[in-house]
Image (cartoon, rainbow, N blue to C red; front, side, top):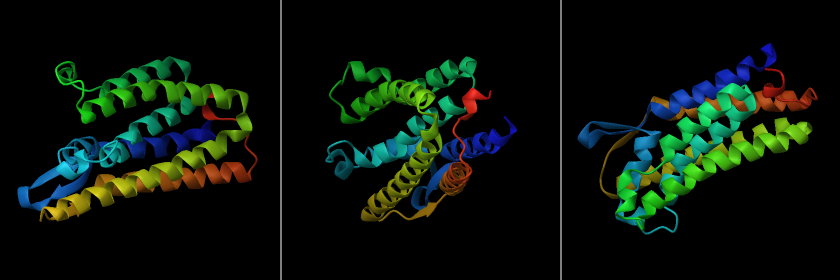
Length: 202
């Protein structure tokens, strides 16, 4: 199991970076972690005009990706705990009952459902197709990098359109580093012909 310690450390880096500041808005001396950043972006009229609140989706979907990775790297006892926490984090507030057509609330509700379905489906699939494990982690890492870069670029562009001065935060850099390290780790496992994944050894 020791060979998978790095795997869990890198996921920990991504989770830590997610809750740390991603963006500083100098005009108002405010810092946003990825979760609050997504909520802030959703308030812009130009973002409300997109089909799926794309900017917010880029920032929120990291929770789903991390849940998939955690499902593959933890024991059965912890899986339900992580799923409950992830779903609770993504669930919209109670105001959705009063404004069910709000696109921001709808996105949160859909992501909360996906936060349960996708991790379970991924774990079941890789349990039967173990040789796909390194490729799966590589894919998730690449998607995570794309989401992080796209989310920050979109947020900074929105801020600049309203003459808001922004600075990239340490949280974003830690998340990017975590995904890159995870990508390198998974590529090494693939090159070494590893055909299992952490949960099977835990």
